[in-house]
Length: 199
Image (cartoon, rainbow, N blue to C red):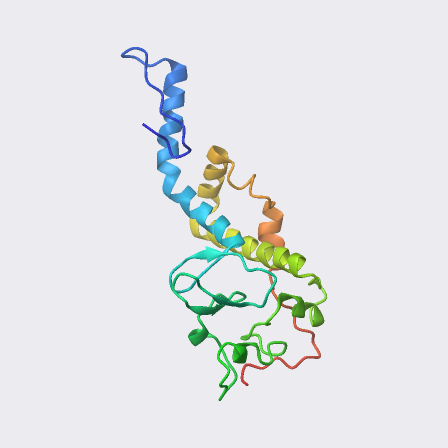
């Protein structure tokens, strides 16, 4: 019988298990008990590094081009930055340019998104001007946000138990301080910019 972590469950050599065999068997029961929650945490960790198509769920990472994505499976047009379908994106009123209208005035409208990640450094100096480093920052922010979310969803006790059994948090690349204390504001708009939510 295979365990969740891929190892095979031990077999007893006699009708009565030794203390060592029983302890190993307890680990297997705990593994099975935690399997669903481990799967949830694994999905959140993976989602931090990839963005799924909002229509079919195919996940991937953008290249160094714009934030406009077209799914190769279902042909859905969507925004990598906010993850929304083009039809659900906040766009300029009376716009006729589809997803490009979602980029119009992004620098003063928090409901809109930049066309290129490298544009963000023009208004938020925390962002680099290099596309690769922008992707790293974007996915770091997303990963931390999702880890914070899964922690709140499952609770401290369950997360601690998952980490004791699988080392799932201690090996994820982030500290608890980063998960809970880091400012996860994606774009900090300067105080002198009038942020508006229309046109």
